[in-house]
Length: 161
Image (cartoon, rainbow, N blue to C red; front, side, top):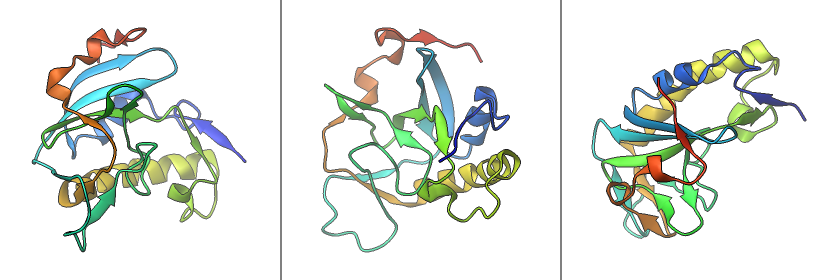
């Protein structure tokens, strides 16, 4: 089981933020050294549903761990606040590292650093477009990001980009 950090894959945090540009505008970026969070304002309003009874296609289930289906993108899940997302904005967690055996990378044949890095750079913008076009279904607690300020999260400091 190989586990690669973004630095191992030669992807800088600024590069990853640029890969998120099809999803929206990054307004705030904070880090505690291990975990990086970005506040992103979507280009187009998302369709956020609490249940999936009336949705038949174009559905993304927000898993309990925050993953958006088979994507590296993850909505931040706070223990007290739950998921921090609304139809205009969300707090997204940038992955600390990537497991080479994850479901996201199952289409990659040669699992070396260069191939994985190339695959991520190619597919993150596609994942962003898919998110904007889909209905997001969440059955867990949701907090409106407009009601909190990620700059006040304990232990996190703002990163200037």
